[in-house]
Image 1 (cartoon, rainbow, N blue to C red):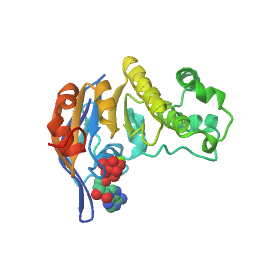
Image 2 (cartoon, protein in one colour):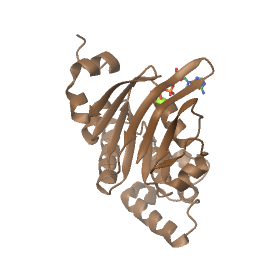
Image 3 (cartoon, helix red, strand yellow):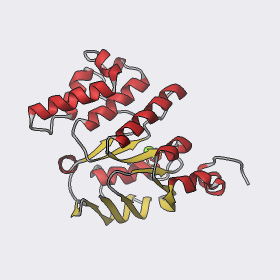
Image 4 (cartoon, rainbow, N blue to C red):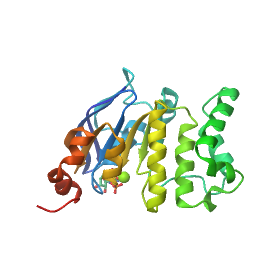
Length: 238
Ligand SMILES: Nc1ncnc2c1ncn2[C@@H]1O[C@H](COP(=O)(O)OP(=O)(O)OP(=O)(O)O)[C@@H](O)[C@H]1O
Ligand SMILES: [Mg+2]
């Protein structure tokens, strides 16, 4: 469904992503893991067209979308919930969700989507007319995710959805990811919460200093203490 071939991203002299090959098949949850500065956000920003790739190409559903701007990516069916839950703080929950669905021309489909996500994220229904900036961190994260889903993406890239949240909220976010997976959505999940991410993912990629260090079944990475401790600083140091 989504295919990256030798994708590199440079910021001047900084080589953030170096020649990465990555694939996400329809219906899969794929975890993209790596420590701070590994290049995870740069990689999905390149997929979204927010940053330019310096070389390589990106294909979505068989089409070359390497140079397509973000609006076109949204129209193609690619969605992103950016790092740091960027909701519009001065707009209400309702207005944030409307903006997420604004690319959808069919009013009936927009209304259907809204009903669906308010059911899935009941807290947003409760806070519907409240300014997004007054929501808690976990509530803002749910808003960021549902705002992105309002555009009816076929693949969604979630950039650290659990960052900075209390353990009980983290658990809820991962439950939601499992629900989205069960509903058939394809997900590329960027996380530093490796154990949780690998528990929900089918496959995983491990990125370090812009390069892929592992690609394989999520379970395999979960069981590999060496890889996890070496690249993620997790588990017992050997
Ligand atoms: N706009 C930018 N200009 C210059 N360098 C950048 C820019 N954005 C990111 N970088 C650099 O690119 C590298 C990769 O950053 P990126 O944000 O993609 O990492 P990340 O894996 O998402 O990290 P984190 O887990 O901290 O979010 C880092 O060295 C970072 O400093
Ligand atoms: Mg990041």
